[in-house]
Image (cartoon, rainbow, N blue to C red):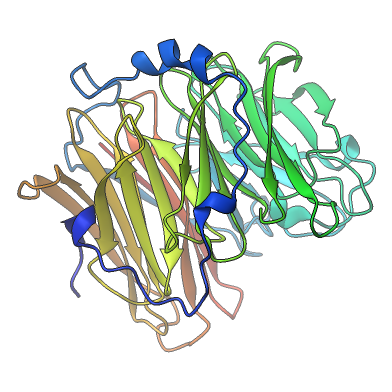
Length: 421
């Protein structure tokens, strides 16, 4: 089976046919009251000349944990949804029960660290468990952003102690944060939440809000509000660079591409990225490399792609999976120097095996190294067998940890955790 990625210049990319009238990006109303104030902040953006804040990847597989999560292991039974990996390598799972919001943390040795029920924090909860978001940085609490449910109820941000899962504080958010919200952690442990009030009528502006909350007590440190006129979809993703800059992502919801805002550490808008038209995804994700440059993952025509941007939000590189099929999943992460760590997980359906593939490359240069792990699916001939990439990130120990869920129809389920460096 062929693995790896194709790396090509963004100018060489042919936009896929979507069959949708994409409209024009000039319909997006960008609210920027502080353009002159932001100039000094944007000057501090690294152009790649400084040392990256991420380690160089050595293409070494440290461990591949296979953790059963079916009824043969009572403490894990029902925890079949991988939603996060924290900066200390912990993997977070949750259930899909309408009567509880169970969140569990698995240590790097595969043991259950703790399990808590978040339901008491959200009295208006109404089975919106699929929208639960969890993030844990190098410092500060682990955050769970829990939707309260329909009917105008807002989300609740819960701060948990990483080692024990005990609740440190809770903050009910306002009406601009209702399900579908995005969550990230700043380098110092503060929480960043990106939300929108999607209850406006057709023709009304949709208000998007990005807030930064103190790790100590959840108090609001700054807030940035802006508007998209009658086009915006749900808040897709939010990410924070090593320097504290915030990137948030909205799919314009009408085939007109995406909107990315770049907000400075003090909550002042620096600039925006509009479009291009072919990037229109319900699964878009933003992150940054070690120099704070934006990396955007998106899906189109049933294939995953990633684009990296420079400090001026001009596209630098396009990445696409070498194995073009609906089971191929691609993520691009920053690494040391000017390297990029390219993660590809492939599970073509039906499939006899699944594969986890990491490659290190500098665009325009030969691939530096690769690590590949392949394993047989328990039910290879079952068309409903599935293996889904859940979450991945660098840890404080300079390891790259990724977790995925493998589900079979006969209730044989596993979590795979890969530790690499």
